[in-house]
Picture 1 (tube, one colour):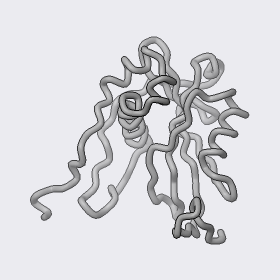
Picture 2: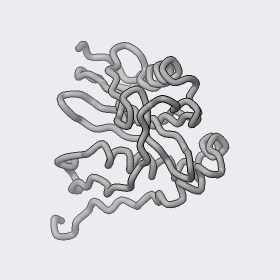
Picture 3: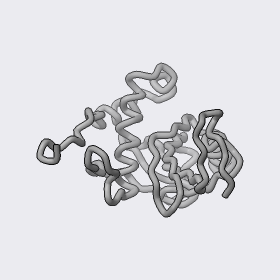
Picture 4: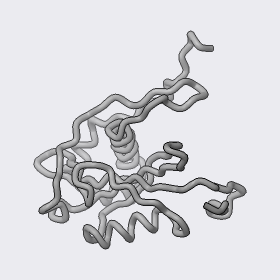
Length: 170
């Protein structure tokens, strides 16, 4: 893949860029995972389109208009840059799709200067929901977009301060 600038920044990415999309909705007092790939992340390779525009467009085409599209993290995996996204949809959009209630998981932990040796999709989703919880409190658009039941369910997802530094390694 050819090198290309990233939104005018002096950064070139010569590896593929993939979007990892977690489609979520709120039902029965809980948060559920669904999407075109069922209760699993949806992977989309981005070539010449801005990843958030690509995720928004494909989500709209496959599921109808999303309530919220937000990039939550990135990582290097399988020789590609993987951008993780949460796409929040109305529960009606999930009818007929395989769905699963989301269970909590531990975050993937790293050292102070290295990435975690392995990152499970459930850990990416945990991080994404903690990030959404913070945005629901801090970002006026996200706060207004999410319903009261969403805010109630996200209350248990408390963002943590940076705790990667292990004093034994320093």
